[in-house]
Amino acid sequence: MPVSVSPLHFLLFTFAGWINQHQQSVIEYLQEENRVLKEQLCGRRLRLTDDQRRRLAVKGKVLGRKVLGQVARIVTPDTILAWHRRLIAKKWDYSARRKKPGRPRTMTEIRHLIVRMAQENPRWGYTRIQGALANLGHRVSGGTVRNTLRENGIEPAPERGLRTRWRAFLKAH
Image (cartoon, rainbow, N blue to C red; front, side):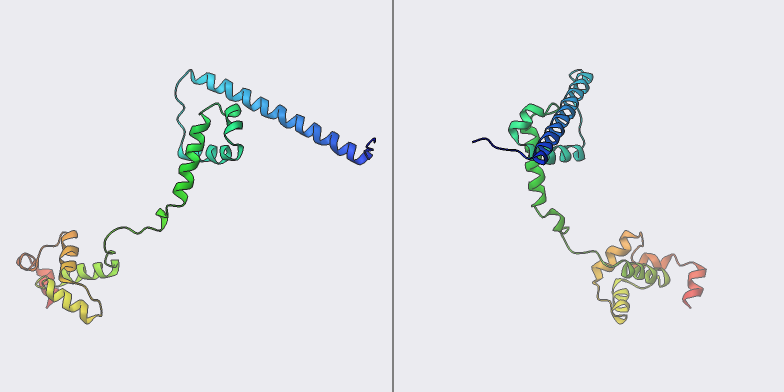
């Protein structure tokens, strides 16, 4: 039984065939261009960035191993698929959600306040600064005060009190 094809279907089939032929020509050109560029390397190893590897892995996974075997010229299909596996593994390892180990740092404002109190009151020790901060509503330990002063190069209270300048003395009184 003969199948009749409407003129519209015939036109669509013809157009689809032409598009397919055009795409195949573009692909063949790009493959040849890749071969020429690879010859330019003269056997030297091609250095790819992480972004380039990622882009190749995403596009290569869609094609599959069989098509990659025919198309891939820069690296082997196994390498491209391995890059994709690493990319997926990195996506699901939740490393972006991890916090840094240890306690969070003391707030910057409190650290600045500790340094300011130590500079304006050279005879105050760690415990006195800790008590003054408690009066202001900030709970910090003596060790935090000590570490903050040490980070800023400020000596403990006995050494600080010995080097009082006149300007600081007059300001304190």
